[in-house]
Image (tube, rainbow, N blue to C red; front, side, top):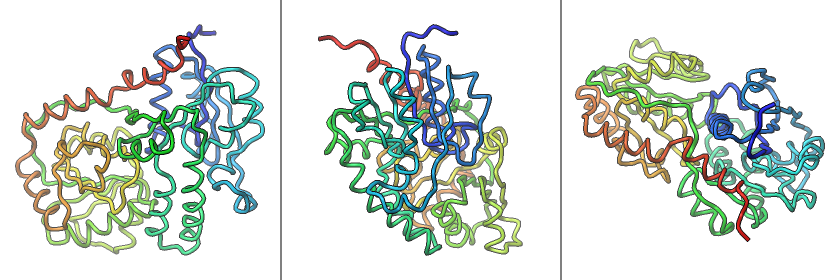
Length: 378
């Protein structure tokens, strides 16, 4: 058994393996950084489709799985569904049994945050989003009326719930704009930028006539953004556009496209996606809604290739200076054509490298959590 200076309960909203979508990427690499810094992790996670993975046992001291309840009765309770469906009594028993600090991953896992049995613990919460606003945006993007009803219902509950959490808890917001919002309610809130598994690709002078747009296209907002790029932005361009991510084949079926201009790469593995990213002429990142911090922005920036983003994509990240900013269809298309033709300057690359190194170091960010685990002076 390893000897650790600190022990920490971590409650994750999902199984953080494989780290293949935004939320669990942040969770997985945060836990990995803490473990490498000498923190013994007791991981508690909810399994509802991603399965149990023996790979997690190699990283952390203990891994416990809990069933998430999808009973319709949760809709008649005072808490949001994403919270009440994770209120496992077995989880509470496990947390009470051993007197270690607790890190709650997301508002989703905070069902027992105010429980009297845990009131003497150091409790920390990672705020992945302003969830009420995020769910309200989802209700406007989805075409399914039943999903829209659920998202609106959840948004109302979340708006009230996430500003009434206990004040004597440490909160970590994922972006500066989120942090400023939560500071109105929680004085002990600070910004903790996303953890990730990216390494900055070497500088390259290459150019390519290829645009890459990545995302999970089973998510309504990503699907909507992709359709906008196909119909409004690149329909009149000669650039090749590759849509890479889960559900990409849905785009092809929806548009019944026969053009060779648009390519669809469905659910690429990490190596394939990284290779594609490094060989892109330009990354285009577009969204109709601002929420949290989109990990695909970091992925694109670490690839070493030019990145075009609209203001909503970078809102609250303070990364505008590392992107080519464009809002309208015409501006995005022109910027993409110029970036594909000219590539990226060494000065722009070096500025990007300096900022990414200083602000997105996993080891440095882990110290913000570890410092709280140290004995506090009287």
